Image (cartoon, rainbow, N blue to C red; front, side):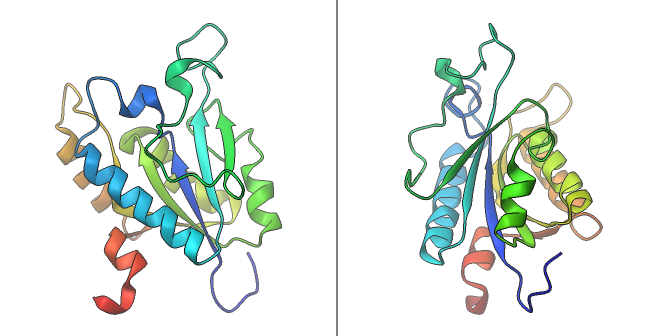
Length: 184
């Protein structure tokens, strides 16, 4: 961990790819999800803090293989090609077997702000594994999503993860509370 007095944060935008966000079934509250993520991206750009876009890359020959149509990030994201960093991962954790940990350490990041897809898979994994690599996770409650499962509605999956991760695993807050803390 850094010895700085105030935390230094980075935004991790996880798996906001065509195959996750632009094919049926669409993520729960997709438009709100995109709006909140773009608001967070703009906040990080405005405060000159790093934004990392993480893509899941499946094995060659799979639909999510690097370069395949559904592997690409959705075009609605406010990506700044000059400053934002794209990282591919092949596991649920964006920290394992990727350059992410080293890049975060180089920039003296203490807190990782986690958003994206899917709540119960890669978002949950990022929250749970960040501390093992020395980072404090902040989950944005209204900036991650998923689709309905056979057992639970997407709204219930999201609410469950926001509740069970808050406190022992991560700090959970809304987009508004994160971007405008003095307003609340």
